Image (cartoon, rainbow, N blue to C red; front, side, top):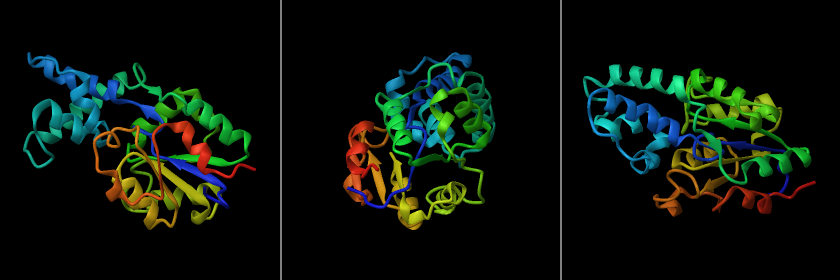
Length: 221
């Protein structure tokens, strides 16, 4: 149980929303446009949290160090921009969780490494984010997670001390960023990396296996 918490901050992909179907579709279109066989979503899903790097890695076995990567990344971005709201949805229980947070009078927001080019249209298109009081993208501050700067910026926008925020995410870098920002951390084991990673090594303050269980950790007013 966390005491003296005034705000909840969430990672986006793999924590609040399942965007893997659209991310995978954007990468898979690059394969099929080249006459390559389509890959199943199950191959893309575990790497969805890594964005373009993860999707291009699955689709073509390339890394950011490969010469052709920048051009493929831009093609992926264009594909994703065209389809990013077609198959993306909130995980089961997330809408109810946010409603409870709102009812309790707690503030909440999003801190993601997704660039604002995608974060803002996506969150504006989904009613779920209508009550979010801070949306911080990967390029909002000079540093992305695991640097604490984006989390500290979100706390500033919420006008809440970092120690009175908790941060929920499905990647080890979320826990690193949260600790560096002085926030209690919660690992989302239902997320992309949570299902396969050694989460004990993340040193999160708590772990949840579904969104609704976060409510058990909050002392609601």
